[in-house]
Length: 207
Image (cartoon, rainbow, N blue to C red; front, side, top):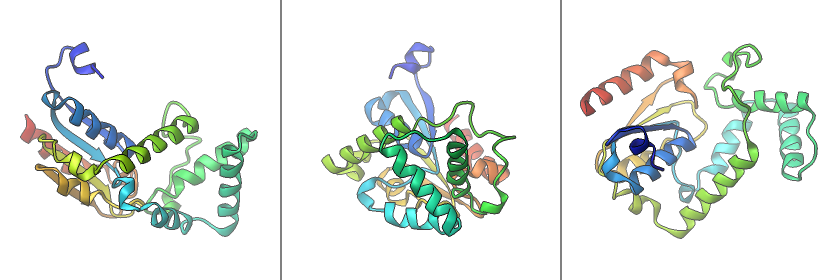
């Protein structure tokens, strides 16, 4: 990763959402002189914290029994390499995002307000998760994070089914955690003003 040098920046602030927060942390570990600060939103703890079973249960509780059956059926067929009908794929994606909102009933209509310009790449997602788990099994992740000296802000929604990365924030010499109440995994959509109020002072300190 040579983006900072390529774009003419001696150092910069790296930020990411969910797994992207871990990408920012890994970047800071590999290129410490280039990182002025880190912002991680909705970033969960490392796999070694064994949080996934509780996370899956919390998500499943937010949809109906029929929806859970459909969700798991499509997930299983996808992992088996079977064809997924586009309408099924769309419904599956909607359910997946709905479970990430603190109030699933308030989830936007993603047909009208798409979250991203491109659909998720599940193959890449699976590969990245496997790589993260392998790294977590091979090293003491929290000890490795202790090498990061840059200030780091973790922003987490209280209604995110993933647990907050309190262990990660504590492992960093300048890590801090801000919880956004009544927000889920996408707090900037659910509580934009609160997220801005958390991030702006942090950025001002770095400036």
